[in-house]
Length: 509
Ligand SMILES: Cc1cc2nc3c(=O)[nH]c(=O)nc-3n(C[C@H](O)[C@H](O)[C@H](O)COP(=O)(O)OP(=O)(O)OC[C@H]3O[C@@H](n4cnc5c(N)ncnc54)[C@H](O)[C@@H]3O)c2cc1C
Ligand code: SF4
Image 1 (tube, rainbow, N blue to C red):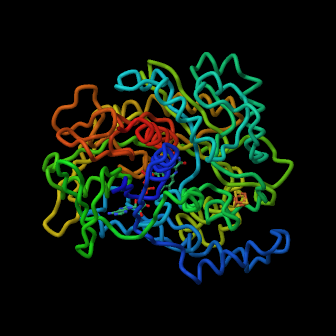
Image 2: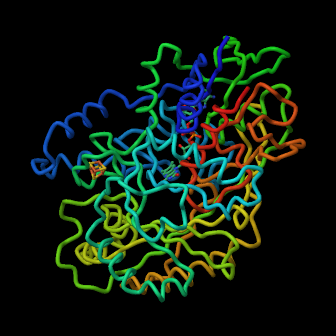
């Protein structure tokens, strides 16, 4: 028998890497959805050409499906392969932004690739500390490419050294902001703010073609399918597709049942199916933990601004990338005992598109005005710790979907207001005029920084897991995605999920 890993997303490949490095036999299962042939052909066609030779029709054809995405869905590469439509997982998906994935590589086919480790102080109430995670951040960075540079964020996050890393060159707008912020570093410090270049999981060789939010034609934005390809070269590793519906733990093994009723037996299982699918599995399995699980969200909001300077170069002319450009961390107990994390996005094609579709029809002939405004628009996406955010109760419906109920948090509005006011001060120092009246909170779950449904505890009780992710009462089932995190700090989630999954894989008996 073997170790069975359910899921090939970032958490699945991380635990599998650790298990294989210890000489264990691993079978990985995932939903197996991949980019379909027509979309793959479009991608290959674009990648075969130099971006300077792309025609306007090439670019429009690549971008159009993303502009046409239904609400709640995130689409890249012109395909929905990586995101399960909400109504397939949730009975009432309307107020919930979170979605599952049945793709090879999971949601990492869609992500923004922003990576940060946890800050020690933000996980002081966890049963494991930063010293437990640090070796695993290092192990993960051996296969996760991370671009960035040594800057003021380094001291805040010593668990991720930026020494000798390649830098994805920030856009001219972002470079200008960083110069202003550096110039005002004393005032920035008084505001309890730290800023630096975004840390991004992007490989070297970027062509600065600006298609990041539509799908990188060259696959330079990390997706965990890349690590899966490497794992498949290991003779101790086996991979197959198939959706798991439930599991059952016995004295000396675990049985999982696939969608078509086929049973599989394993010594241990490592559940890395993403927080919604993991919750569904837990609620459907025997012995189940409870009839109800509660997910913790890290709520986010968007604060738009306009830059005040006269640009020497148009931001919509290549070269540029459209991933997050700058990270800003607010560290002030008057706002929150935890960090507030923000990612700054400069020009991208969605700005003009969204402005024209929202306001263009009300003012006929106004499209050029919105396009001009879009070239000055810069948006900060800020995240709060889960202590200040809503929770989502999940129960199992008779048809196997999840019934979500949002439990809002009385603190959210106040913490968001304090964070917005402070962020606006920081953005002013960066040469921007914040448009605080246009602040837009995201739907619950839409940050995708969600987890903690079976939180790790030193002495776990009902509904909790031990520090190896084993739900109370189970000894051969390990939850290694965000489900077992004790809570969700505002800083990006995936790097810590990967490090934790790797830690479990290295420590499991
Ligand atoms: C638009 C977007 C932007 C994001 N940006 C960022 C970011 O910038 N930074 C960041 O840190 N995070 C970001 N995230 C979140 C990030 O994508 C997730 O944290 C990460 O993918 C979670 O990894 P995972 O392995 O736990 O689960 P997933 O990525 O969801 O993978 C789940 C895996 O399990 C498989 N699976 C699911 N159900 C079953 C089943 N029943 N049986 C068998 N296999 C199953 C799937 O096929 C898949 O392989 C973003 C997410 C989205 C959608
Ligand atoms: S700009 Fe974005 S899409 Fe283009 S090559 Fe670089 S990472 Fe890929």
